[in-house]
Image (tube, rainbow, N blue to C red; front, top):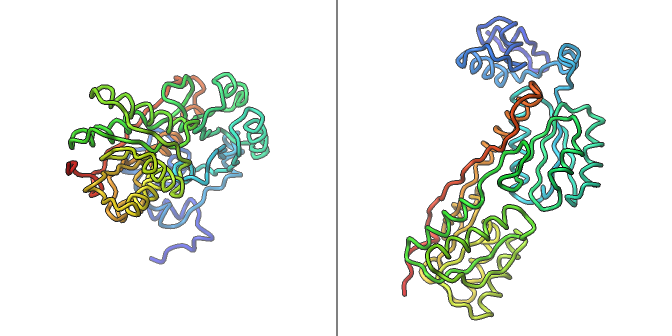
Length: 340
């Protein structure tokens, strides 16, 4: 049987391919709870195969909703926030929602207010706030969002607002403890900018993990997430004649720059200096040497944030809480026991 033209795909076409009724397809599209997992998967597979797009205008009339979510994001030119936006958008589309995006340059109440007002023109059903840096208080967020359901992601651990975060403190402890378990006792750090929640949490965890091991932290230099800043930070540590056998770096891009600086100084990675990054960007496995790093599950972050937001949209009495995801240490060839 020939597949329908994707430009003319209807709900009935999806039902025929999935082997279910049109009413069942409608239930899946509208995320109705009373659909079996197997049936839901078959319908979603058919939707993807045929390229079906729900009629948002019809759905809006039926549900009094726009079927649109708004994303307000800071720092989209960096890997983490960019991945968050991508995964939120993908998950939202899979749940039948469109997405409209507003980027901001400073995380101040005035700019966030302007961004939310701009999204208000799209009549969004809910908001995802990607708030990775210091700048908004709990009261600010509540006042700015008003009666629009929202979820924060990449905010500080313990925030008393609907939020989904990855535990950066735990991730940094994994990285630092890995080096300690290899036998390293002289560790330096290149952190991200400390006005970012994640960078500050990783930095504090690095200090706390060394303190728990009875070790004095080595020198620390603050970077700006770029490879260039990692390069210059490593050169600064070397110029200070800092004595270290291991380097904890706030993200993989800065680790790339740091490795180049170490090599230019005649040091081998990992024989002379072990290096650990953070994020597990796609290129990390192809660094020379392949980079030991901490993997953040941005896909799960996107899924959880949209799932939570939809729950808030569907039921305003959904309990307010913070969902916490945990990163994973990925061990590759940039770390080994110290040679001394």
